[in-house]
Amino acid sequence: MRAQRDHELAVDALRRSYAAVPAGQPVRLAKRTSNLFRPRSATGVPGLDVSGLDGVLSVDPVTRTAEVQGMCTYEDLVDATLPHGLMPLVVPQLRTITLGGAVTGLGIESTSFRNGLPHESVVELDVLTGAGEVVTARPDGPQADLFAAFPNSLGSLGYATRLRIELQPVGRAVALRNIRFTRLEELTDAVAEVTAKGEWEGRPVDAMDGVMFSPGESYLVLGSFTDEPERLSDYTDQDIYYRSLRRRVRDTLGTYDYLWRWDTDWFWCSAAFGAQHPVVRRLWPARWRRSDVYHRLVRLEHRHQVAARVDRWRGRPARERVVQDVEIPLDGTADFLRWFDRNVGMTPVWLCPLRLREPAGPGSARAWPLYPLRPGVTYLNIGFWGTVEVVDGAADGDVNRSIERAVSEFGGHKSLYSDAYYDRAAFDQLYGGETWRVVKDRYDPDHRLTGLYEKAVARK
Image (cartoon, rainbow, N blue to C red; front, top):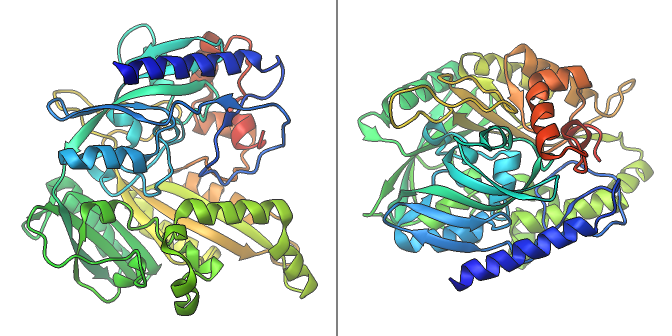
């Protein structure tokens, strides 16, 4: 009861802070962390007060559901569910991603080949709309249009204050098989088989992702929950997880460490800060080997451009940021990866199979209009994060534009947490612009919240 009263007080504070934002001024959340790679225009307007909306309200082990506030991080949610032998159906790979952020901005992880995206496990959610009202949206009912359009709306339709989500049982550890492939078609065939059968070589598969180091060297990591773990590996100290794929055929991690296996080194991006150098790593406190610390360093660089100025002083070419996650239909993935290797040349890249969640009963998988993946189709999420040299005669953004064209040519989609360069017509076609406008006019009639295109492309 106390948790519910505190939640109601926090929602009231949020509504008051929203009402205090002058008309015509941008509305943003006042939060200390962000997993966006999209720079935004500055504003002097105070952000919305979400200080009391970052907790877990309840966990029900019987119904396998949790009531969670919108600003609660997955790190805090996992801390609350694992003691019950439960976890969310999909746990995005970085600790400080919030529940509301994963639903309005999408998320993915190794259980997505069977559980889809985080928003597909939402039973209902409360949303502060652009009209300043808090409404409860469910798959059916008067706010079903908002429920369907909220995923990938990026705060342009409102902000989640409370979500009820489904949970799944897990073991105490995850047994891993790291399978090496020398041909990309062999890897995609294996993904198709595991997705169809839920097993590989007679053993059940509960989680699946992978890494491509080159078109001739890729790995599929198949995980199975277990309560009888062997010796557990530790990748939070000197060992680095992604390197283990090349030297271990089998591995076992505690479930908690498995969920955050990528966070310690931000996949492999901690190398950019020297955190993978043996000497630096011994000196770098373990509590600071986290994705949110690295992200703060990136934001400082964006603000002060220290590295860019040093490169210019040394006569080095400018570099373009290429930080993207894209979904490509499985049957075109091998060709796309070879195109990417030839034209971008960034390695390693993350591979994560994805399929919209199948319903428990009769019927087809639900479609989500603002990120219209096709029901019944298996996709491979490809994540690549880094910079490339801006060649003579090219403009900053040209590599990202070429990737956008290739993704569309291969029938895929890309997430919008980073730079986007689409014109409005192409953007509307790819991201449900017509549906978005109808829902926007209903729940934000004065268009107080920044539009989706303005957020994703215009960086407002």
